[in-house]
Length: 128
Image 1: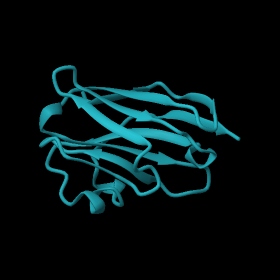
Image 2 (image 1 turned 30 degrees about the vertical axis):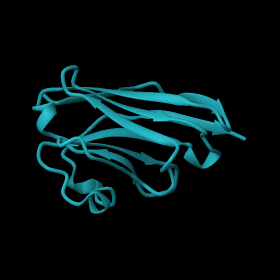
Image 3 (image 1 turned 180 degrees about the horizontal axis):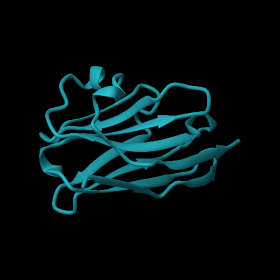
Image 4 (image 1 turned 30 degrees about the horizontal axis):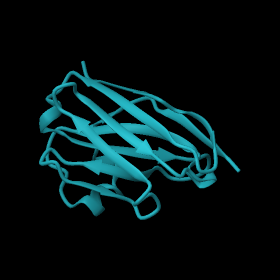
């Protein structure tokens, strides 16, 4: 049974930091494309960061330079370090996976339907 369990969300002020973690099980983590998406109320799900099984990473323009995605294949975990948080980062953050290559990073971050496994999400709220 596949499971993705996120943790680390919370409330911070503008400029603060949070570190999200995702614990994965039930599939071959090291061979999977992993990503973080987020969804704010009334908005579409948005790709934030992606981590390929090759080690490559990419970010949406809105978080580039502030967020860092990392994976530990031995621990089957995916992290998202978020620095210099802004009110517009407020959203539910989801860990997601597909058990194959990512494909083109930019494309993958715009196609949440191509990811097979999803966690339940963790809420991030940034106050001004």
